[in-house]
Amino acid sequence: MPMDNGSCHRYCVYGIEIASDSPLALPQYSHDTLGHLECLQTPAPIFQQAIDTIVFESRSDSWYRHAVVRDGSTYVAWDLIGEFLVAADGRRIVCRRAAGCSAESFQVYMLGQAISFALVQQRFEPLHATVVVVNDQAVAFLGGHAFGKSTLAACFLEAGYRLLTDDLLNLQESRDGIRAYPGPPRIKLFPGIARRFLGAIADGVEMNPDTNKLILPIDEHRSCSRPVPLKAIYSIAAPHDASRRHDLTIEILSPRRAFMALVSGAFNRTLTGRQRLTRQFGMMARVTDLVPVKTLVYPRALDRIEEVRDTVLDDLRRDVGIARSSPDIALAMLG
Image (cartoon, rainbow, N blue to C red):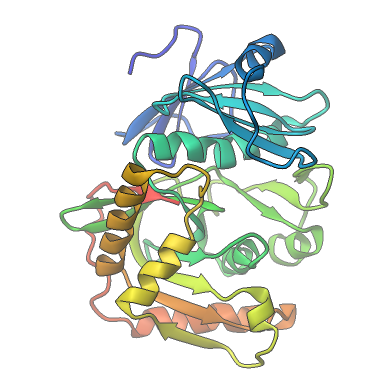
């Protein structure tokens, strides 16, 4: 796709080339990509014209709003953060940052929730997962909001492992397997967790006015900026299920249960339709065929998180013949 002359900054995230008219906290474009996306800052009147005649699908009292516009584009907005209009083909996002919102917070929403609409429209399937790199292979922790994905990843970072992506995972299949693509080099943590595992919170910025969770940049030594083969997916049990347990268990899922876990772990559940669901089901079935999917159940006690990390590492060492991807094959599928 030809890029607008005003989009002078070129980056790569989730395997997608991004052309932006303003600087972003992302790695510069450096390798072949799976798709293209243009991000442009736009004044408020453009959004008003787009939403004058639409009916919002979210509750009127919600701080989050979304709707499908007549031309097939998607409007998404968060109070005190900003608003986004994603083109029907997923190749352009026009956006406006709310007054008083930090650039870091705005980019978290743009490069997370908003970009997931673009990825789905470009026929990718995002997964809600945080991923670390162990022995040059991706290990994904799948789970919903507040499941503890980022906390567990931070514990891996403390032990010297690298972060691939926090929250949104994009994967791609090739003839040799599945590869996971890097997200923005940052992680979202509560201050106490950040102090314990990262040592400092001086560079942290609040994610939004309703939480004290921080957006923390991850330097190049603790992050991975290239796609790597996906070794395993651990589906984290919901906190209310794990709270009744004192033991720590890992169980490999049957193909059916693995498939259901991946479908439940889709990052974007707003866009629906026969074509999207058919593609999503086919893609999740292929991941289930090629990558082991396991449940990870553990009590939410911070003093046991290192035990969880070590148990996962022991489980990875026991797996034989699981990594089927070659390091020089480029793949991607979302998450």
